[in-house]
Image 1: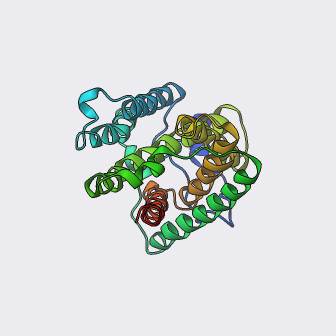
Image 2: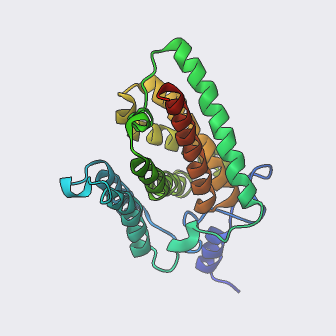
Length: 265
């Protein structure tokens, strides 16, 4: 017979039911129920602290990392520091946030990039009617940039947006762990609440970029983050939401370049 401890241990490893209409069957998020490893509360604080340090490295780089070429280093540190922390607390399971890309994943990337663009434009039109929107300096500055500076912007976006996905997905998994393992919330409720909270967090870190316009950032950036989190919920693969995010931002950069060309022929 199995001992009580063995039975409880195996029960703790069992995955709760997934959201059938949204998630892939027999697939679950890592870490929160001990698969492939469990990251405890204290370890999650290490990871989240590393996320904050990586973000600080991005937005507060020293002067020698603000040059035309060296400015890409803070974007690399943005994702490298959290990944290093994750690998330290979960050396045998840190790669669980990455999955092999499937054929359908390559369809989900442009699909959610397009969906996010539609949502962003729709909300933006509402915001413009209700509020005085604040422009993102990165977009408005495209008109005066050289070809080399514009190329670097597109290149720098790749590591930076991967870092933004880590800034979103790692706290999402940490909140999921806390809600399910520590608060006893149902998995479905925890997934929904974690997604909403990450939307608020992602909006908050973008406040300086939009002149601290809280309503605009919550209604625009926060909802856009929720849309971009859905492909991770579907696939459990951070490459998919990163790909959607990159395609989305590149599309907006390209549109801004076209409009800048019309404004300054």
